Image 1: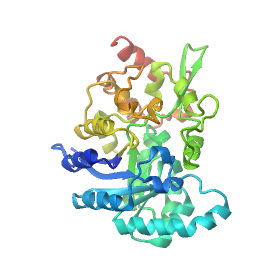
Image 2: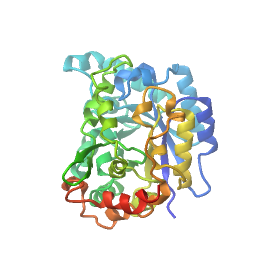
Image 3: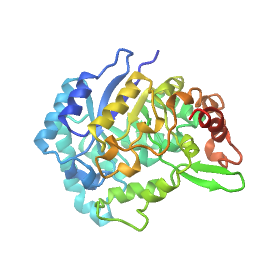
Length: 367
């Protein structure tokens, strides 16, 4: 049995701090090896707006990092903005960015996650020792892209492209390259980002990777405030309304706690648990599910829903849909055993109806 290593979102509460240290390693060998997060001071360098990031003093931050490190848990700091503004803005910010990187290194941060090549350059100008991780926001789509990032910036960690989570041929090739070149490859486990659309002629729904994802990250990187609302609550409102049919959720690229072994077989045993802006109650529940390797409940409870994105309601929010996690045993085998099947090459719901049929056979009658 392969032990899995998890990176968990960190919200700087004493309760989560103690939980992570006390539950670092489960009896089954699964381990919390790393936490990730950022501070409000660096919101302009992050893919999260300031109102969603904890206000933590520099001294308190250093204490958290060092306490975790003493317990064998590394801190991954996210400088993963997808925009630093114009070239003139970048020139003006360079000194402050490098000063902040030096502060992170002084605190003992083990990894810095980036999206932009220019940010990777700033990190490597400051240190050639710190681990440098490529964010999922960079959307790696080819193995050659990884080689270019490694050759130019010395990246030694990658968080995979969410849209590739069920492309097992690509993941197998990427995993082999990473293993051969000393790069740690991790996949996002509990992310359900995507869009659905009604297909009238087929009387069901298509779904695909979210068309708003890049712009969503860009808006976050530009540090919008809670008061900044675009008509229709763009883009979140569109995403929420596109997933009204329960079968659409099966077409998202989540990885269940029970399915980690499928990815272990192609050499992947590092996974990222999302939801760092959630409550401690939420983070603990989801982390427990992945550490234990099983979850007895509604699959959709493993994700921080968009309806809760700016509040504390994730502890009380109830999903309008129910997908019993236990009903999805063997669901992932369709992709794992058909490695040439790539969802991106299909017209979902028309040229491939696997998810729709699985829903009818295993879930609709279950409810």
